[in-house]
Amino acid sequence: MKYEITPVAIARSCYKEKFATPRQSGIVPSATGSIQLLPPYNDPDALLGLEDCSHIWLEFIFHQCVDQGWKSKVRPPRLGGNKKMGVFATRATHRPNGIGLSVVKLESITRTQQDIVLNVSGLDLIDGTPIIDIKPYIPYSDCIQDATYPFAQDKPPEVPITFSIEAQSQLDDPELLAFIKEVLSQDPRPAFHKVDEQRLYGAHLADRNVTWRYFEEGSQIKIEVISASIRGT
Image (cartoon, rainbow, N blue to C red):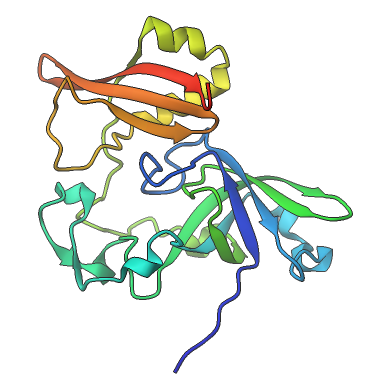
């Protein structure tokens, strides 16, 4: 039995590639983006009442992974990238049907004659992600206070961030600086990578090419942002 799914919207995001995109929504509050409704779903009647919601569910397609297939066992980053678990016990991107689920904050709705756009924050979606459904977040049923998941019960500890003189001079926008700091503090490196002070990491975040390295200070791992140049310069 097969079903056809059609995207209802496209995500426009500050994340331009998979690397450094948060593994969960909400952990980078400064991450902003928009959800652009596609015809014929850009009908104002379809959104009647949504403006009263503070948060929404986004169902989406892992569009950069669906052609890579799936496996019954995966290696979750939270377990160090070495221990295997069943795919249905994780939120791995390589899934039988490649469907993801995120909660984002609905900041506002912009309506024009041609478009309807949902402005959101706290998203964890790559730019261009197809959205297949939008639903309201309902606090009394969607927030289960005594729920447990022993493999990731708490948010991972944040990695302290420092900025080189060059990076500081390139980040004169406080909001952009806060965004980059929140993203990198989640430690986006592959879980199996050990600290190598000579290894440089890079990602396309918003309109910047961000480069950073890891180093140890005592027993603590830290990140130094080397540069954050405007993309294309």
